Length: 240
Image 1 (tube, rainbow, N blue to C red):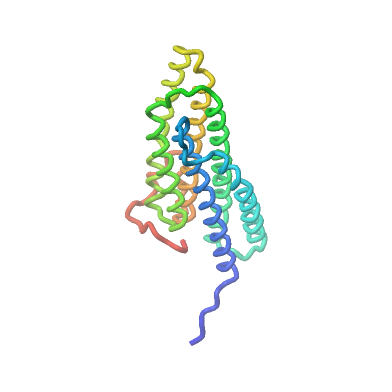
Image 2 (image 1 turned 135 degrees about the horizontal axis):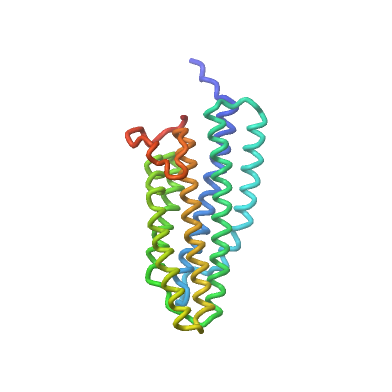
């Protein structure tokens, strides 16, 4: 029996997806390094050096260029189905969010280095659970990407409010500390910026989750439109 022919578009889509997953893994590694280094700020024996985070950033930027070029050439080819076009468009949007997450990992590393050059201050107690929440959102969003899992993607969307609450609590605590102890303004400001970067990482994880739902289901769930997602539908699909 003859083997069914594999379409050219399927081959190119597989290549594009492999590029995207590779970029996602690199970004996840760098962000994880930054989050670990942030929690170890002030430690006498930190296990994670923030300087390592800068080494992977050029690779992430190069992968963004490769993915964009491949995706644009596919769109120009004019041979894609509507479902395939949806996948390519989602890939371009996800790539942009991954690149921004890579930038935020570098921004965090810069804040961590600045903190090590200042007198130590106690980190807000909400920082560690905020980092844990952000790390979980990123892990789930990239898991949803790799497995095209809508359930994981929807869980990411439901976690965003928790990160926002942590951010608000941290801002309030740090601002109170700066008012009470002007000498701590400089290091506390670095922590304010770091918590803002954490919030933005969560925002990008949310964007990726929304794009995965669009890719898999063809649904736009931005701006609180998660109710459009049918929880009874299969969370797994390869071609939608």
